[in-house]
Length: 224
Image (cartoon, rainbow, N blue to C red):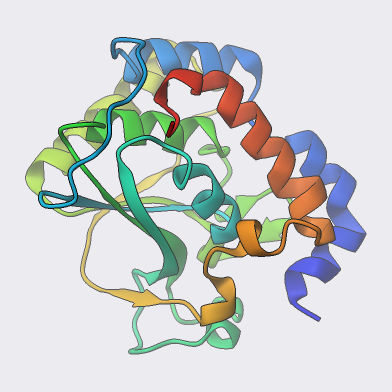
């Protein structure tokens, strides 16, 4: 049995309550980061894609969120930021490799900007808890933006600073902003997890409520 299913049995109710940050955080984050025209997103162009890499706790949750955004071409779960090559899920769970569970997102910048991806990133997890998301504890669950170029770095640092100064979150944001080095895809059974395993308890009680809240807040940014 996957360790996350065990965690769900013990801590499921706690995770359900944690869901998103408080409504005040959502409102202020939207105002600061997601300053975009509210309109239906057009079809994306697969010939000119950019890449973003985010860690925000369990990558099953992160994957399910970003798969639904218009302009996102693909989302792949994996590991970044560690010290060993080709890590396995078991090694990652030890917390000793230095890797974070991340999702690598390919997207069409003409359809959705990096700012909008940052908005989704900060609104769908708690960036103020160090090495923890709800009941998932360890450096592998840290909040992190692995930037791919100087523009991504500048934007991530800018919005992190503005969110802190705005008081959008009760506590200071601890999100790590680090240069991207290498991405290792996770095992096949981790990919497209929510879509393929929606009936599993963790998906039904943890991921599904997050997705539903996300779809309400980002209804103008979802895929058709």
